[in-house]
Structures are given as C-alpha cells and as structure tokens.
Length: 128
Image (cartoon, rainbow, N blue to C red; front, side, top):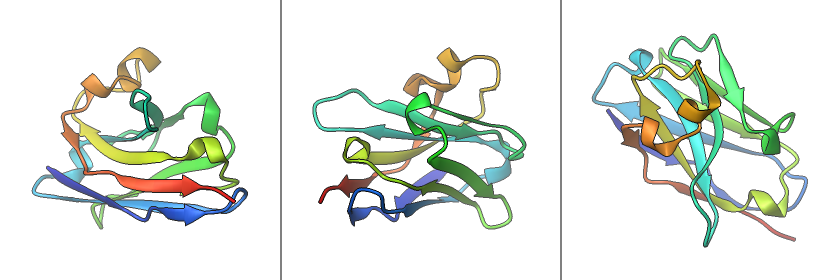
C-alpha cells in the first residue's frame, strides 16, 4: 500500500489543523494505521493509532484530549485532527500502516518497526 500525507502548515499556538493520509494500491481496510512525528534532532515518536475497522484507537499521553485519529475506509483516508496546538507539536508527521495487531501493547503499536508502510511526511510548524 502507498501512503501520502498532507495538510501540514504553519499555525499559531492554540490553532487547529487536520492532517490527511490517502492510501492506494492495497485494501485499506485491512491495515491498522498510525500517525508518528519526528522533530528536528529527535527520534520518531508515536502519536496515535487506529485499528483496521476503526473500532479502537490509541494515543500518546502528550496529545491526549487534543488530537483525534479517524479513518474513512470507503475513501481510503486516514485523518489526524489536531486542536490546541503547542510549539512542541512542531514536527514532520508521518502516516503508517501495518497488518500486525496493535491492540496488545503500547510497545508494539508505539514502535516504528511495527509498521511496514510509510507516507512521505508533512511538516507542521507551531509558532507565534
């Protein structure tokens, strides 16, 4: 499956932004999906994940209550709604896909190594 993320940009603290990720070349509804981010000089960090059916989702403590992951399997789309953005949210955001089960532990779903397919990333800059 090929993934392409979009929707990044420059916003001010407290603003909202929605990222999108379109999937092609595979059966999107088979894949568990996730968003990761990577700030300059830092390792890639888990943000949120959602199961193939959309029935379950998981998030990092750093985005709890502010970010929401969702998907539309009919449109082959993954989304990340980001509210109340902070300067520390500045990063390149990546969508990722895996056929591995992600519900068992954070160690599995939070590891970039769990995901086989990656989008190219979209830059989010939060600055006043």
